[in-house]
Length: 300
Image (tube, rainbow, N blue to C red; front, side):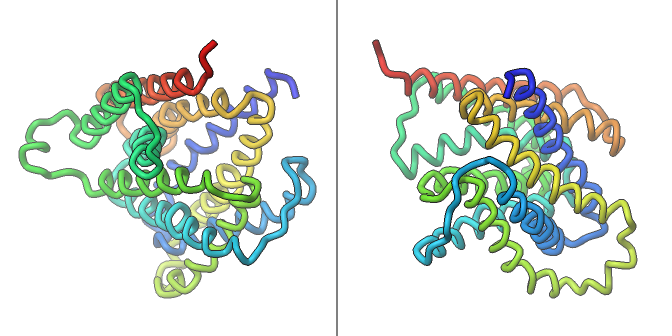
């Protein structure tokens, strides 16, 4: 694969990830959160399973009994926990805010790895972490002192921060997996669909299904196929070409694309403060990633 093709595919993948915030925001008023999680991963499992048999992504892997406890735990934290909170947050906050807060994932992952796995954080990384966290505070307060003094934070923003924290924990713990990443993701998809099925039934589908139009169902299919299956498979292919560090840089496009799509598709108001906080958070992420990469390089 040429570098140009790899860059193009990752930009498309990033655009699809950004689109998940728009699709989720659109679906939130029509489809309950447990049902959204169930449908997303049921469809994603049905697509990704057969895809593994035809795509030259990685070696084959046979599931072992010893894998199950780890898979169930990671599914509950990273797939079930994150996505329930993600869809719940979109009932209260904008797709723009949610995507900006999601950009803190690398920062929260670095903090969790430092706490749980005693990974060293140097001063440059700490500076990047503090810069991004300042951007988070600016995002959820809108840079308004009365929000801070009155502690009247948007509950959707709080839900999203909790969601990203769970996802960061999932990413940190997932490094201990013994199976290839795409297979690991497929098994997490399947387990999450199984876990959420009874919860989806408890949301009384007959009460809300008549109000969910074709556009809402198409948005669910989009979230299952484009960001969940296509983007993840592309990421695995591109990592082989560019390496994980250079591939990870593309994630920083997600809040920018989400902001643009939110304005164009959802009609959300563009605010200069949101653009500023996005740049602050992404700058902190880039500083932290760059400092961590330099620290990991062997000295000559």
